[in-house]
Length: 418
Image 1 (cartoon, one colour):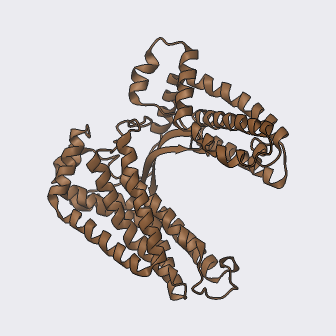
Image 2 (tube, one colour; image 1 turned 90 degrees about the vertical axis):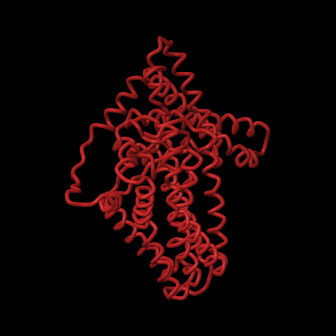
Image 3 (tube, one colour; image 1 turned 45 degrees about the vertical axis):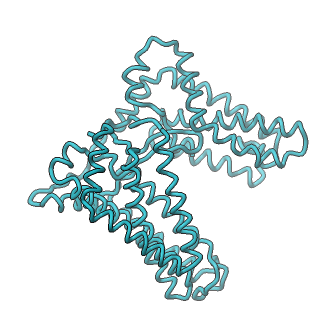
């Protein structure tokens, strides 16, 4: 994961000022590595209690603690190294590395993670060797970071759109829907696997919809008619099916983060808020984003309705969550992000739009609250109906009050939204 989604936490101010200072390469690389480690790689150390609890002796405990530190350094280094690699190389190496590590579950002792699956001696040796190779490469990349940041910038800005969109003859509101229903914009900060980066992508909605429909069809088959559901190849019954319970939670987190963090990131206030009433623009922007997000969760909501018709009644709860609760909650989440002022506007490709601060932490807290509501909704059908109705009413009230969104536009511009 670190190699696949890694990157450098670089702000535009870093490129313009920090990297132009006459600093010693050694000091720069070590300082940046420590910052990257503290920002994300240190999360590997959270596994301490899990592995040390299984250690049989003091010597094993010491070795496992040292190995966790080495693993944290390794994944941090891989996150930095991924900045050097082209996408296809990154994906290929990530697959090879993943298969290599997974082989430890088949009894292969010589992997970087074998020390955590019982092969303490050989696993520790391999982990030390891999770290000894990766860390110097990462430090060298950080020492010449100004070149690395330019390389990333060129990669991100040298691509061409293969298809141009024409809005000729369309009114302003129709243009909003035409654009946002054609593409699904994905963006956000990635803190995973010992790496920190900011990712943006634009995917055709039709492509996302096709993939979701195929995945939902497989989901219906495996859940409703397959022995994998814990039953013979017959229609499902009212038994509890874990996958039906988990998917709405997983999809809910994706949509909430996607909507709250990405709705305003690529918008331009000087154009959008002056071309029409800010309240009108933001309301239609939100509606178009919700509709495009349904390309991801909509097929699974329909699939759950089919499961409910087949006799798996928990499918009805899941369908209500996916088709009503999550879209309504995503509007509230977007409002909270903008209201608190945690919008990270992308002003230049290839650069982090801003630092992580307390405001961004606060806007994540409602996501956990919504997850709790989703869990309750999936357990009790009555609760699912009440929660869906309540969130829909609140979201509707927000959408129909123009002063709410005019105030949001004002707050955004106050905080440097351009």
